[in-house]
Length: 328
Image (cartoon, rainbow, N blue to C red; front, side):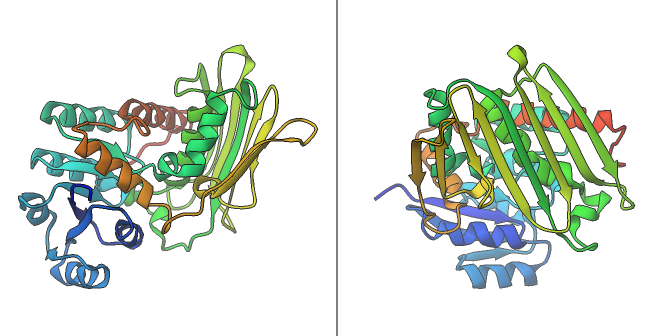
């Protein structure tokens, strides 16, 4: 029996519910406390997902000595302040992506976690999932040779009242959707491209509606990435190596449960199939708990330096577009 870890969830929206469900299949995870801006919402969430306690404020949750780690599931704009509150209270943190609005905030949050000796990880669930980890090993082991290019995109359909259209919540495609293609490109080509080129279309809601990004690397390597608030939900990735390729287009690449590497004559070089235990969020919870049990302050799967590097790329994309949020 693994050591129990008592989870608190800060924010009670849709993603918080998905994560709460995932905790039920993560050995040793205890659904302890849920906090919302109102007691009514906290009570409803706790009842639905089996949490022992409900708090009508975030401050109440982080002050509870019984809470071991807090999952922050609030809108992107709130992440930085929520992390500071939680880390200052001495709690380990798993924070939804993007980690912050900008790289400066990410640097400060990481510095605070290190100062406090606390665990901090961005909730980049993809990097903890079995299939992604297998693909990463294929790439590292040279199964498709040297990776020369990554092409990835993520578009989603949303109503005009969705948070992604709201400037005040740090909406837009880049920080929420573009984060996936950029993170994956960095995983396979490196987190420090030599150049970042991008173009953004800023819509009527004063957020980015469409983004096109090219990351250049030494040796002619590159990533071509795109994201947007489109008419349908679609996401795909193509990883091209000198000996073969990996392509995922029949399911959302960032939550793939099967993959195949083939050579240029379509001979299978490697394949895998790993169905989720629940919904895919369980793997990041497991990673957090294993790190905490081992006394680690960050994860090797989702290191803070990589999360910060991605934020720096997104900063450069916004700078290229001359776009900033009013509250920055």
